[in-house]
Image 1 (cartoon, helix red, strand yellow):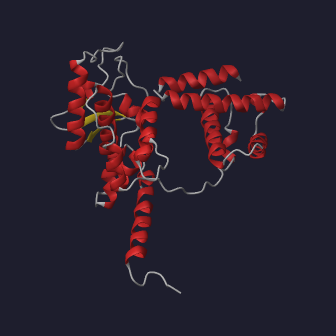
Image 2 (cartoon, one colour):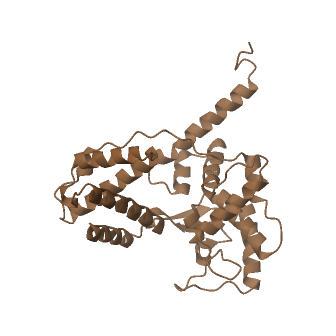
Image 3 (cartoon, helix red, strand yellow):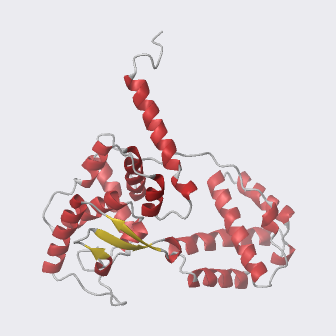
Length: 300
């Protein structure tokens, strides 16, 4: 099975799938490979009964439904690849239904909380200016972290306040950002250039966001930055970069933005993915109604 896994991963890499996705798929398939070894089964002997046995094995190990659903999705894609390559005649995972997942509403910040977070870095040193620019841009554009750290100087139009993003599936989109983010980015870039840290990388591109030594920041660097900012919130609530993406979309919707426009800005392939924010907006409206209307609730 190792040969098939390597061929599958290489095919995904040729489609420019992210390293994070490649790592997750590789881990899931190694887990399934180990399971087959325990059951003394070969890859070609796998049928839907074997797959149900694997899912039961995952349930017994107390894995969350989301993890089980992800592993099943990985196996469907893997077996599809093997069928296309002529290595298998059919996909046994097609007969297996995904576990029903609980619907989770996106977690987001209030406008006041968002302002506190993005304004937390207040110094004039390069690190403070860079961190402020990152936070402002995340909230102003709704970029994914991996999209943000992949930005080069060439992708940013400071005059028009636009960024050109390479999103999932190597799809390009243009995303605007506002004056606050524009000002923060201009101050950071000016200081970065003054310190001589605007250097092309191995591809000849100049990374937009760099460390104090001039290397391109990675996704984990940005995640750590965002996690630190939660200390500035009165609630001290958990905060991730994706929370700022959810906040961006929710605030746009609450202020009347069209759902399809939000879909384009977020880079969602399906409008259904974006529609979860309508539920967030309705929850917000209900909370405001119950807080303000004198007959929203009985007092007895």
